[in-house]
Length: 399
Ligand SMILES: [Zn+2]
Image (tube, rainbow, N blue to C red; front, side):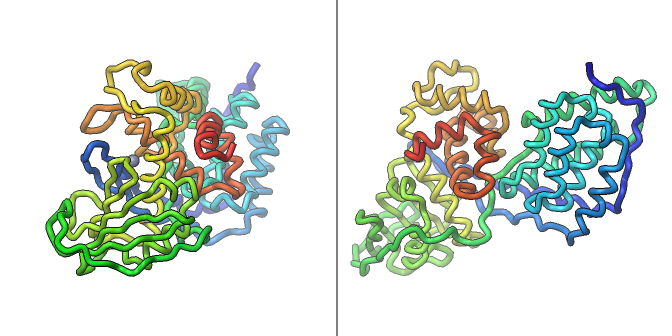
C-alpha cells in the first residue's frame, strides 16, 4: 500500500540559486575503423557551483515540511545525506529537494526512492551535475507547476511517480564525458629522443619534410612522425611527453605510433584502431582536452579483447556481435543508464552509418572509469553501472 498524496503544495524554504545549465556536449566520436574519420571530443566547461548558502539552515527548514516528515525514516536519511553532501553542488541540492517534495516522490517505494536518490544525487564529476540539471528542467515542466484541468491531483501524482522512475532509470538524463580541469597526476617518466630527418613524407593531409622521434614509455618505444616545420595547434614533443606520463598503463600500452598531420581535417584526431593515432592541427585543442581523447582511442584498441565485431546494423540481431561484445551489450542493457550522450547515440545506431556501435560505449566507460578510479565517485560508478564496471575492470586487469 502506498501513501496517497492529498495535496500538491510545494514548499520553497529559501530563494533558489539558479540551476546550472548542462554543459553542451561536443561530438565525441573519434574512432574511425578502416580509414574513416570522425571529429573528436573536446573538453567542455564544467558547471560552476553558485555561491553557497548555509546548507544546514535550509535543510532544517526543508526537513520540517509535512512532505518530508511523511517519508519513511530510511528515505529521510538518504535525502538528508544528499542534501548535506559537500560533493553535491548547491543548485543540485535544491533540485533534489524539489523532487522530494513532489506528490510523485511520496508514491515511490523505499527501494525506488533509494534508486532515484542514488541516480539524482550521484557525485561522479559532471555526470551528477548534468543529471540534476536535466531533473531541474523536468521539474520546471507544466505537470509539476499547475494542475491540468483534465487531471485529478492523484493521477497527476501517479504520472509524476512514473516520470521520476523513468528518470532514475536513465530516461532523459544526459550524462557526459567529464572534462578535465587539469592533467591527471604523472604515473611514469617518459623520455623523448632526438629528432631525425625523414625527408619528404606522405602524410594524410599533404607531402612535406618530416621528422621522426620516439617516446620511451615504460621501456617501449612509441614512434612519432611529425612535419619538420612544426604545425601550429599540434602537440609538441614536450606535450606528448606530458600526456603519455599521465596515461593509465593499459592505455599507454596500446600506442605504437603518433602521426602529427601538417594540415587540418574534419577530425581533430583519428585512429584506425591499430595502435596509431593521427592528430590534426586544431586551434581549439588543449592538452587537457587531448588527454581524454588518447584514453578513449586507446580504449578502442584495448577493446579488441572483446572480439572483432563490435557494431551491427540497426536492424541486425545482437547475436551477430562477437561473444565478448554480446556480453558488453547485455551489460549496457542491464545497467540501463547511458554512460554518455555519445555512447547512448552510438549504441542506438543514431549515426550516419545506422550502426549500433558498442565500442563507443566501451571507450566512454573506460574514460569514465579512469576519471573516478580511486575517488569516492568510483563506488557510485560501481553501483550505477554494476555490469559495465565489472566487465571493464576485467578487461583492464583491475578485477
Ligand atoms: Zn570512439
